[in-house]
Amino acid sequence: MRQVLFRIPWDGIPWGAGHVPLFGFGLFLVLWILAAIWGLMAAYRAEGKWVWPDLTAMVMWVAVAGGIVQAPHFGRQIAPLGIPIFGYGMMLLLGLLSAIVLAEFRARKAGYSPEMIWDLATTIFIPGIIGARVYYLVQHGNQVFAGKQGLPAILFAAVNLSEGGLVLYGGIIAGALAYFWFCHHRKLPPLGIADIITPSVCLGVGFGRIGCLLNGCCFGDRCDLPWGIVFPHDSVPFLALVQRGFLAPDALASPPLHPTQIYSSIDGFLTAGLTLWYTRYRRVPGDVFGLALLISSATRFLIEFLRGDEGAFWLNLTTAQLISLGLFAIGIVLQVYLGRKAEGLPLQAGATR
Image 1 (cartoon, rainbow, N blue to C red):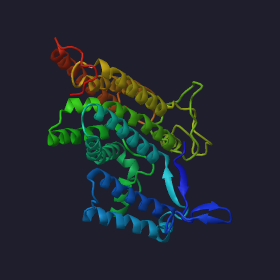
Image 2 (cartoon, rainbow, N blue to C red; image 1 turned 90 degrees about the horizontal axis):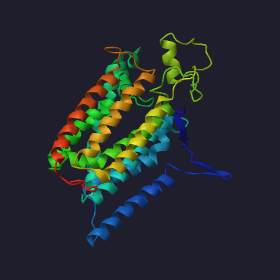
Image 3 (cartoon, rainbow, N blue to C red; image 1 turned 120 degrees about the vertical axis):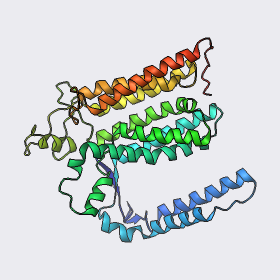
Image 4 (tube, rainbow, N blue to C red; image 1 turned 180 degrees about the vertical axis):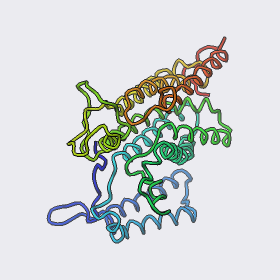
């Protein structure tokens, strides 16, 4: 695991006898100015004339530029060693960007505007993060708020994502609500758009689970197989096992644990590839989404048996397994509905409308 991948130093990158400045009047400000110029040039090529940004965009540009210039002065008070780049956040960002790029490509082939994908991603992302965090707080609130006194400390603990603390199913539930609102607002076919973005969602999950490994969350139960992973002292799995009485506080490391994060990551990538392949054999809109729903819920149900970070909730099943059973049932109902709808229709050869 590696919670902090690297830090961006306030003094810049060493170069010879000095430093190449990043913040202040340095490289980041130059890149920000070049990005603004590129945006103006792109608008000029599209419109055939100079199109100046509106007041909101200009205020944002100036605010970011000012933040870059002033960052070395106030940043050291918050993070003296530099800005930490967390592995968990980096993988979430990589997953989001790769998912958007893939969805843009598929949307363009289906006759939709790529800008629609960016709008959809923006609409889903924030509610998804909030839902994933709320779900985590409901499950692990006692641990998150332990020892926190006063409203500021409690609020900071509620939003502090530096050590993870997001639950996939919470994000899916909240993101689904935002998704259906977006489709209704834009008058878009929900099942058709779902077929476009389903491989992207699975791809994003694959990268996100690598972030879970780097952070140490979503860890597995004890593993006697050669690929078991040992987590170091003071890691998330180590502290969790100590708290449950399964490990002595003075132990050097955790016992070998199932790399359930890797299992889930492989599952996400394979499902993304399978749904991309299956698109060409799709019968009606919703087929690709329905297939992913069945596969993902079934594999999550099975992987939960190897997880070590959640206890049983009901019938000796975890909450994630109960949700997986519900999603699998929904997937079966959806497949029956789509099957009846497709009766007598030819294959649609990858069509997405």
